Length: 170
View 1 (cartoon, rainbow, N blue to C red):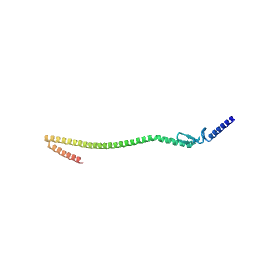
View 2 (tube, rainbow, N blue to C red):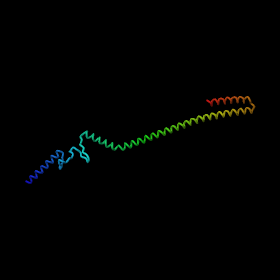
View 3 (cartoon, rainbow, N blue to C red):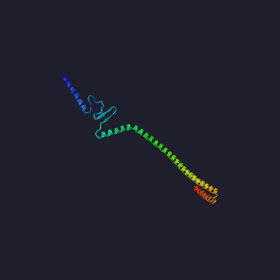
View 4 (cartoon, rainbow, N blue to C red):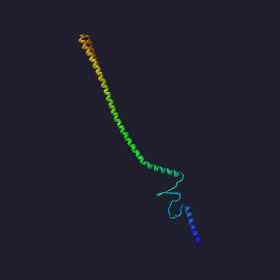
């Protein structure tokens, strides 16, 4: 009889365990235990329901995007700071180029002015050389007592001086 009661108690325990497995309960868990059903994934802090097919894939993709976004935020901030610094550098470079261009234009203007002045000085020097040459011929003609040649040379010197003065004023 003892054997029979022992056998009955074992049967009731095994049938209760089988019924618990059918309803998603594990062995040894009572009715008051609030464990998640078998189709749930249990983590330390939360319970998430398993998803099937494309829903699970979408969930995984969204989770990955969130993780990537969290990981990317510091690098995005760093890149934005680098871009800001590069923009500032480019602005400084543009400003320097503007200054250099202005200085170059000033130097070029001075160069052109010096070229014009040099050309004028060279022309004046050539004119002075012509005058001196004419004067020396006039003096030589007067020393030789060739007054006709001296008069002709004096007249040509006057014409040369008038011509040079006209060129200088225009």
